[in-house]
Length: 439
Image (cartoon, rainbow, N blue to C red; front, side):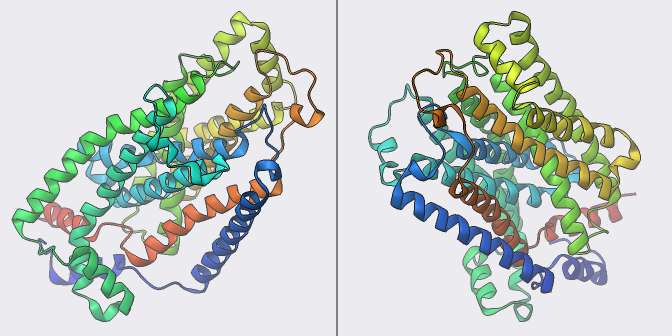
């Protein structure tokens, strides 16, 4: 590691070194664990009594689980946006955000995989996907790209962490016994030689190049799961770009939220600066415009042709029983954040945090609207079925499992921030040293 002035280097290490939970951290963790426990109990009931405990029926056979899956897959794209795109474009300002983005991506993709197994109802049949796979099935494509994306994202989280593990191993008195064991287990082979650094940097570069097409593939394939199903609202060639642009937006919004929370509760104002919020806010503005364009395209063309099934579907969204939810998702998830972040004052930390929160909340409801209204409006009219088949509102078990999965994602991020530096120490020291040495 290239040193700065010794006192400056020590200060950076002290500022970014992982710290113990305070009272607020313990309460936060306890609340997340309680929500996860309720979710586990809901899943136990689903395993014991079957999918009958859910509100899903023959028509709405996906429901909130697949909405949640699409949301997790979308938010995981933040890893390729921040780590790969900005790193390859040599945007040094993004260094404090890379690890935040990667842990969001990894935790989201973990629970995207889990929620798919939950949706199956019979988890013991999961291995049949591999034992009896059919390459013609888009579900197989989804399993392959999600697995690949998870491995690449995990490596992009781990490899830049290696120099920091050497720093953590050299401060054993600050760590608990478990931490010292964990740091040795993960990084005992790392000696910090120039050869290791060169190999690590080359590997990170290759992974950054690799993850971009993989990220585009995972969101395109997920969109194909819908587009290859003959339903109004999904019968679209626009779905791949529509999903990718929406994923970039929600990922950018999630980073704004995480930036503010880590900056405030870990006192990282010197590292996650107001200028970072300004730059990230501008990126989110661009992504919001892009997603808004694909939304207009997604609804305008079917509205112009106005085929009967599409007419019913669009009426339900724009003026029917889903109108309140639809306009909430559009206004809160895109329009309001766009208006806030267009102005410099709106890109100040707290205002950007509010805009990012709106984006994330609106994005979740947008995924719900992609799934449920479409399933309730098939091309063939619903006739001669019980009344419960015509409506869908998640049961408490579904809500418990969904909230448990969201809490589980936050729990992974929370424990990671407790055990590891959330901002790369080695890269921060090196970059500040280079900036000091440059004329």
